[in-house]
Amino acid sequence: MPHVISIGEPLIQLNAVDTGPIRYNRYFEKHVAGSELNFCIGASRSGLSSGIIAKVGDDEFGLDVLQYLLAERVDISHVRIAKGLATGVYFIQRSYPVPGKSIMYYYRKGSAGSTLSTEDVKESYFDGARLVHLTGITPALSETAREAWLKVLEIAISRGIKISLDTNIRPKLLSADEARELLKPAAERSYILLTDPDDMRIMYESSNTDETAMQLVARGVEIVVVKLGPKGSIAYTKNGVFRHRQYQVPVVDPVGAGDAFASLFVSSILKGWKIKRALEAATVAGSLVVMRRGDNENIPSEEDIKSFLSSMRGSD
Ligand code: KDG
Image 1 (cartoon, protein in one colour):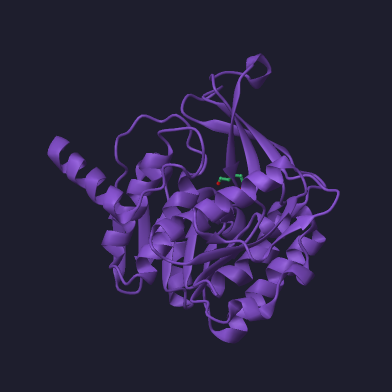
Image 2: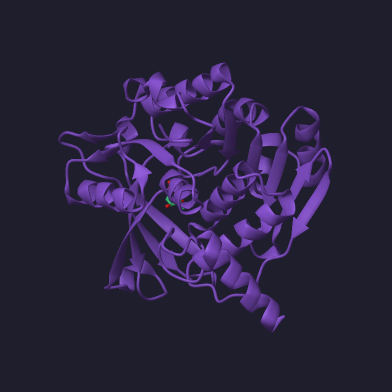
């Protein structure tokens, strides 16, 4: 059984080859994506065994996802094919109207992934688990997906399995009230909480991220990581606060960078790395992912992190 387990919706991403308003774009590049899938791929490339609880459509895109996960050595024994349903899709508009930023347009209503339910969550799958990774996206997919997500949370709590939560609030899918109701209790049960100032503002109705993060640490969250995009990241713990700056790289598409960051940070901590080194690895992963279209192709292995860092040292 995998050491790292997540639950979520694998998606097909159609990423505009050109920048600008999507209505003028004629060419799109296809990628396999989805926040939790990205996380599992990062864990696998970090040398940990990972698996995802998910549903895909009985279509070409569903097969694409399955083959892709197999090639990435992510366990698919708990990925089901939903008869008669389609795999969710989204499009990415790049660098318009804000240069360097992307906009996502989802076509996932009624998708296979949104029919996830408690039936798909088998407690025995968690027998060897060391960590469960949750995001704020899965409970926003549907009522049944929310129940499945809550079941995973309960299993992790009752079995004493560590939880990492990446708040990942998608305002297009989840209202602020729902986000507060669902994510605050999960955040307080987490071993590692990954978030950003926007999500913290929604959840805690305060723009003082330092204070909120330290309060969460005082309430028992081992590490609170605040992702600041181009401004780097901060990890809050009871033993101190650690900061890491962003590396200067050309940004092609930032979508997926947060997942890569989360995955490499959590995986590094699970491997026993110190917080500073884990933040460094996570930052390298985020930096590499923004340099191309697609969420996970550029997630680095340990070897690739070393090469990136030595080249940065050479050019610093
Ligand atoms: O973080 C990248 C993800 O946002 C992307 O792959 C799509 O999972 C996704 C979502 O639901 O937004």
